[in-house]
Image 1 (tube, rainbow, N blue to C red):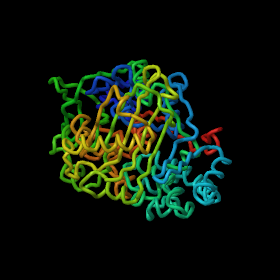
Image 2 (image 1 turned 90 degrees about the vertical axis):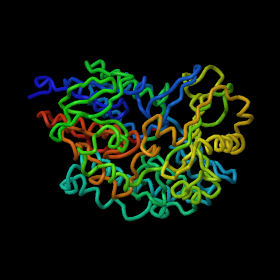
Image 3 (image 1 turned 45 degrees about the vertical axis):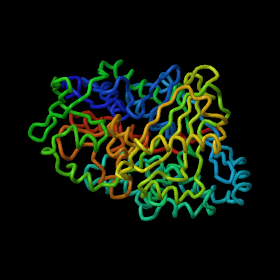
Image 4 (image 1 turned 30 degrees about the horizontal axis):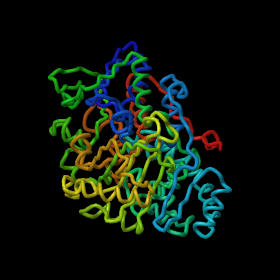
Length: 516
């Protein structure tokens, strides 16, 4: 029985990247897909907002592991090049240290050799060993995590058995990369990627060393128009396949009968029947607000309260009336990086000496700002709302601190005089305005006890016919794995109806290698 014969209805709650991935794959298979999005635009944290000619990505600005994105477009019967204009970024980013040194990681091996020798006392051999050793690890782990982990039998699949020797969950990312990068400052340049998961490199499992390898192997990309263009393209494909994307249509609750999801209740009082429900809301928020507690067992709010969650982020989105000549991606490390990371994870106040990130896409992408102007995106890791910080008081004070750092450390001269558009987002805003539980922008933490089988399953354990996508489920946070969550859930739904969607191909290191 095909989905077209069955004419099954799919209700997708949330038009974020995971929900849209599942929606376009399922719509291609003939399912009657309807996406319900509470906001007036698609994307969720992968969306955008626009003010006076400036466009700001709300969340992700790094696009890596493009091979994952390419595959889900292929499953929807599309060529990614027909929908998106992807531009490689090389050097990948500027890493700026408090003593004035600047490191520009790049595909250019000669440049890497020169920079590592000049800035860190000559450790290029360690970099070469890292790239060699990590290649099979990345291939094996990518093959393993792209399958569902709905039961313990997942651990004895051939892909997982092949990956087990490379899991390295017993050692921290920081300690593990000490094998290759001796100086702390150099090691920081290959471990800060733990922040993509909202974690400390001193606590994140060394499993995630694959992130920095993937950056150097596949490269980083910018999507013209901003990374929000990916969500826009996915929504377009859903509509092309006959699906619906309903904006400004919030869901009040998933209706559950006999432990089975039967549809969604909308805020306006309507009930929409569905054969399957795909949940793309922030997982922990949804368990508190979109599902009645009597339907929850493993993921009851009382149990969620005992889970670890990622850090949050303090954001400044600045439209300025001049072009600043700084790179596309810029990371500024605190003077004492370890202390800064500890403060984010443990302190009850914002860090006194923060690390921060500045995105400056306007040099490459004229669509992001009016001519001669810049759309600057500033992100500062801060504690989530379990810290008890009163951001109504601390927010304006922290804004001044970060603006001072932007004018001094980032050398954005006279920045305050050039700001014409501004939006500040604190952890309190993430929770209140974007429905992010505890303001933890990277969802549940990615310690080993909250990964794989121990993370919420794609086929939700507590409610039948409900499927999870997004950073709060397997495989985890970050755009590439969120796309995978959508693909996995779509594949599971199709399998229920006798449709065998193709599994992900084995990760091919040669095919995915960037060609400088």
